[in-house]
Every structure is written in structure tokens, then in C-alpha cells.
Length: 171
Image (cartoon, rainbow, N blue to C red):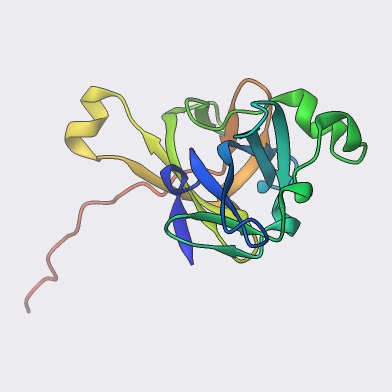
């Protein structure tokens, strides 16, 4: 099921063993190489220490939060050798400028939609400038349109330009 980014931030982490919330998942860890959510930066409720919840350890995603087996599924940053490079990037998707391959400015990312089964980002939503917003509104970008993601911007394939519709000629 597709969920917007607001659904993923500041969520409770619920433990089946404890039967109560054990942490707060504050922000997703996004891998810019494949546009997937690898995990979440969390704060444990008991000791207030920063931990990470990997997506593979989430049993279920509910309206109330993320369900895990136990608080022991939350790990410290130093223990995640495989994700070290992604964590060090601290990649933020919201606010990232979007341009086409011809360097035409499109807008900035205002939101994104995640497929919760695979935790892959499927859609990006770009807010356009005020002038363009009057004529075209916000722009929905499919993940297939993304050509390149750099630390400074997102490059997408060319936008389809609307052509004026002409009325068929009557003979």
C-alpha cells in the first residue's frame, strides 16, 4: 500500500514482547542509490538513546506505529557496517531541487509516497514555483522518471509538454 512520507515520521515502535511502545521512529533512512527506505532513526523511550530500526525487523505497520518482536531489534549505529555509507550520507529527500536532464528547473520535493510492503519510494511530489503553481499545480514524478540523484539535486527525464488540442475539421 502506498503511504505518504508523513505516515513514516514520528511513529511509535510497538514491541510484541513488552506489549507497549518502546521507541519513537523519528525519521526514515533513505538510500539514494535505489530510492528505498532502509530503516528509521529512533529514540528509545526508556534510556533516551538513539538507535536504528531496520525495515526488515518490522513485522507489521499499523496506524499506531511499527510492530517489532522486541526492543532488542533496535540497534546502535556502529553495529550497522553494511549501511554505514548510507547512514553517513544523512540523505534528505524533502526540499531537494528537481531539474530535468536539460537543466530546466521543475521545483522542490515536497512529499513522496512509499510502498510499505517493499519500502521503496514509488512517487515523488514536486512543489513548483508560485507562478507555475497557478498554471500547472504540483508535479507527480514516478520513480522510473528519475535519472540521477546527487547530494544537491534530483535529475528527471524530460517532462511531457501539453500541446493545445485542436478541433477536428468538419468537411
